[in-house]
Image (cartoon, rainbow, N blue to C red; front, side, top):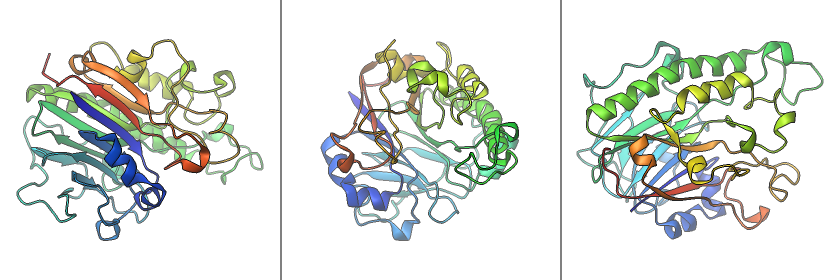
Length: 314
């Protein structure tokens, strides 16, 4: 069995203060994808990632973004978009003999629309050394409202003329092609492909509370959900948690820090496992590690954990 988690920790230093190390040790995952690690390597907490080998792209924006993939063994290869990612050993030091894979004829070049995001620490993938599987960690930009929906005085953020919305749309356009190419490249290398991360999009009515009121809310625009429609399909990538939990509301993975959202389970399901069909068919169980109470939360997200049978290429 292979236990895999995706977790937006909303800052590894804050998550450690809240009990991340105990969660990591107790959950005993084989692979953990993290988003919003938000720390340069020199500022990581002691034993930040426990006994795991950690492929990490912190990005260049101080205190923002950063993606990581934790594995029990050093990965066979790592690939990112920007500056070379690093692999840290369990002692926190760079692991010898592991580095970013050089350009490979089977691996796609970065899509033009993604070049502005290359150094932001938003995407990283590894080839596992102990299974025929490529695992990717994604932190998709949050975005904002399009210009025609921005009304000064009725927004929490300052109007920007739709700049954040347009930025997200550029990312989506480029990433749709990029992930298709990455999936096909993994297949060419004899590997299944698993895309994990914070998508900042709820796919359908079962993935957000009060969905009828959300059509003008960032993260539930029709065009965002249509983009996920294009990514997900029985011959492309399968939404594993929805496959395991068909036709039910949630299970949610994000709740606002504000008000009683967490207590009332007024959440969004935006943290996903998207797997190639062969791997998806091997899913045994899928759970969201929602803490018992608001005061025990490690992050505004909860880890999404799936148990897979040992993957083989099908």
